[in-house]
Image 1 (cartoon, one colour):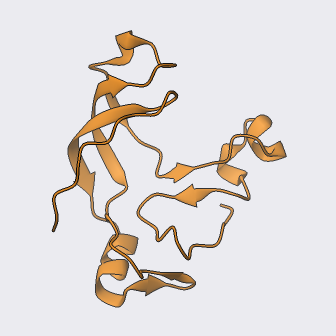
Image 2 (cartoon, rainbow, N blue to C red):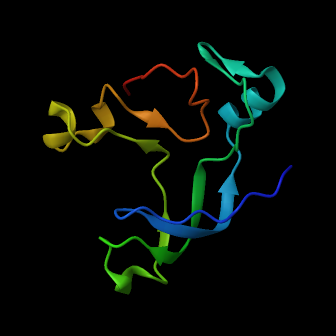
Length: 111
């Protein structure tokens, strides 16, 4: 466990005050084994990616009226520019990155 500074949202991001986090099988696997296939934990990693909470701050490009909204996050970050993303199929993005997955050694995976 460690304390971390509160992040400041980028222009197109929001900051969420977490109300609850689910612990899924991948979290347990990373904790116990330190890896899942090619995804190897080699640096500090914040587990938990099934999150709900409230928006408490917004970036410059996000309307202020979003503050206070209850939200649940998608546990992935698509590239938003590939053919799949621009066609509205972000779940098929070949460049997707997953939250709570080692970023330094994680190859891109499609879903």
